[in-house]
Image 1 (cartoon, rainbow, N blue to C red):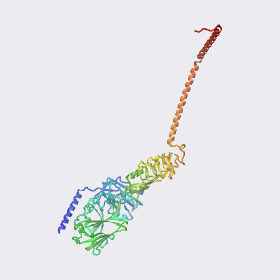
Image 2: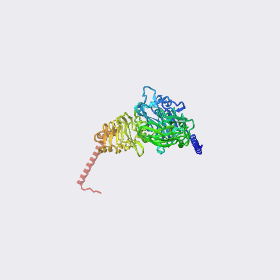
Image 3: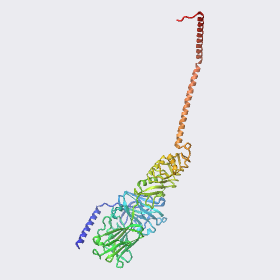
Length: 628
């Protein structure tokens, strides 16, 4: 053996020891497996895998399950979601550590002949649609589940099922398995905002389907499923395998199981090149991962097998020499490329350049999906409060994110994207004639981007809340034909963008705020009719004739006070008159004595007057009197 080969082996062994040391020193990855519809934790053979009971994650109905594939977990129950419970239903799983995860959902069938034998529905993870079930999925092994690899950043995971009107979604199990943060890294920071939807994983040259756990693979691999393929084209290739250990296999960040590289497909003299063809969804980006290990005993060193790799006829890798690029025979080599495919076919071709045959061990194909931006948290919470306050019927759903996936927004919620905040916001709510009851919660004021609010034709009660006046973007407010009472809050006059206001058909009273009355001259359309107590603008009664309840109470209290004052005055007058009569009665009792005394005094005065006159006459007759 050459010095170079020895050095390569030593370096490879050191790298393997270092990777093993790293793996051994790491904690176990977070893992959550849920047996949908199960009341108890269960374990499944042959790996004794633990599945947690299904408790308090979502709604829906529990039922016995019929498995659709031999690769489905051997579970006996499932949960299905009738359309009467809403068009979308979600599992909301909390306390999930931040990191990168493989999220997988297995589907099942309700074990009841009266149910649709093949429901069709969509699946979203964290608000991004990752899978759509198509007719015939129950006959295809790889269609028994949907899987995506993505970052979970907010401590929770939301997996939602969206009805498309073709049967009730039915879910057998959910798995949330942590993988390395750099797993399937594309070489840019944008990888954290991407979702890898698994299209296929092929284990070439092997005849039985297996998961990583069946291969005794690392738990950090996410327990991937590998679909066996014994030939690309019958008679044009052959299987090769080895029992030798494969170097550089289960290493960070992807931790592929060693057994994946111990089998391969090899070209033949009849057809030296290898070609794999599969159907894909057009106009999408795909990430392709190709796995190699030189296990053909006829190849002993570098330069003996060299080939080009073409994707849909274009060279993606030129001059691939497995031994040279991996550093040795029986050493793993992984190549990755991302391509945009316009058509419906993906073709992977391996064309020999040196030597006679091409070789490949495994293939992975992912559709790259950009994760949807979510709706502002405050606005989601506001709608959840509104849902509760108005007792929204189950048929409306309102589960998950209001705006995403864009294919399945909430019924009655209109969204627009805010490029500044890179979030979706709610700009309209239309829940007219939905049989709603309850009241308007204060949290609705958090819908700061709302332009239209239509709740007409329901049975909503209470006062029109003043906080509606704080939604400055509001242009249309329709609360007609409900049971609102009280007065119109003055704060509605602050809505300078308001173009249409319908409050007709309620039990409102009082004077229409002057600010609103003045707006009628600016082409605004307001309707206040069918409110017996409203007044203050043309078309309504005069405010003197149509008093508010408060005004009527005030008048009643005032009238009572005046009445009491009148009674008090009458009592005072009566007592005064009584005192006068009493005084007169007393005066009448002493009248004879007073009259006699008065007559005596007058007689005495008259006698004196007469005597004086007599003296005057005598003096005049006798001469002047002498006065001293």
